Length: 112
Length: 116
Image (cartoon, rainbow over all chains, first blue to last red; front, side, top):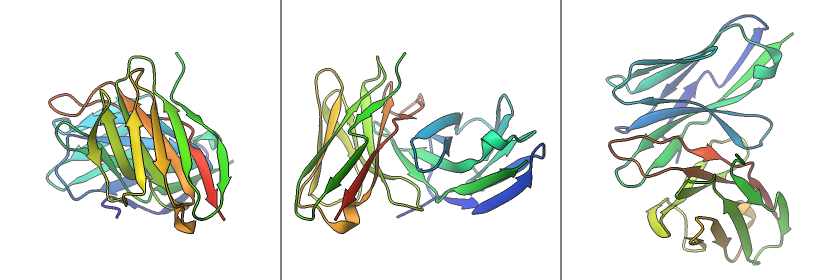
């Protein structure tokens, strides 16, 4: 069963605008990872944020993590048409073995 | 460096048949994990292997099995296929196991399995 939840389920914005996606999870985690998926193909790793980190940047991506609220957000700034994809957060938990628990994803559409 | 590779890309099987999916991790990575992604949902964890040993198993029936070879490549086997096994099967590799350090998991392109 899915333990993570992304919000919103779908988001449509104009090119150049910023996109914010939220993620909630239920278990204690070691880390939280964000992925992008285009048209049912493989997942592209975007960023990993550790449980002792609060914010992380990578290019146009900004991720925040609030372990007290069990939530994370992904901000994509200055969106481009190529950013159109599904975005998933995955909570990494466990010691000695790491299973990623994914949410249902957010479908992001960037309109030119 | 090459990323995670999976074969075959697509596969069509009949109910009751058996299937073997293959995965080669990124060079230097010792851990391989398998996930099942049903259309419209996020991936679900099936197995994790590290140094040829099973280190984690998700909530899947015994019809699902896997193994890891000395070169760290892996196979996922599914017996007695059901229509509900139709999905995208994803392999992910990482350098190590979780613990004090966290490691990124990198995914392959997946194998699309259709059971008719």
